[in-house]
Image (cartoon, rainbow, N blue to C red; front, side):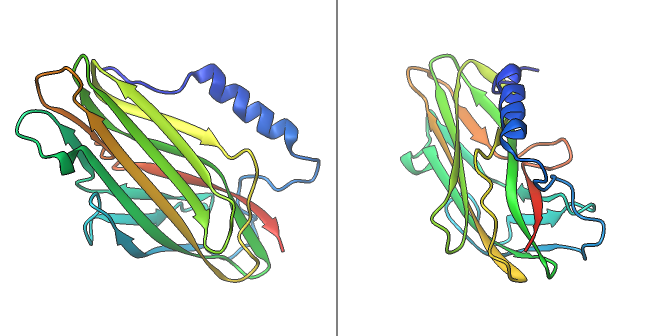
Length: 211
């Protein structure tokens, strides 16, 4: 099975650069032992890629982040496929309840799904996220080219840690887009945010800090 991902050396370099850039005493990715449990909940979702009830979130048991799961989030291009099927998007508003005295930032995020792209076809996966009320946002683009048949995966590290304001609840907006261009291919092409390995399509990792 083929998998197209960002270069592992670039990932390692990005992680190392992020670690070096953090001053001594900066918060770690792991949740503080004394913190109460964090909770996450989808309070709004819309878009052609996520009909009501087809996207959900679940917090990690160790409070290090949360996972987004999608059902039926697929873009398609090819014969007998409408123009509307070529681009799908999903906008999620995730309510994050943070223990008193603490705040969190999104330190890194990983995305994965499936692709069926014939020779000559191409696709794009794009995700951006930001805390409600903040002007700072992060965006990750993953271009894919055929032939590719199997899982894809990518990961990015936030160049700057943007912490949620110090109150007990905050909304994280997550916007994801899939695009497929059939190009000069003559068959069916698709790109999805759905996987079969644990049903985990997007993973956000927290960095904790005291208020």
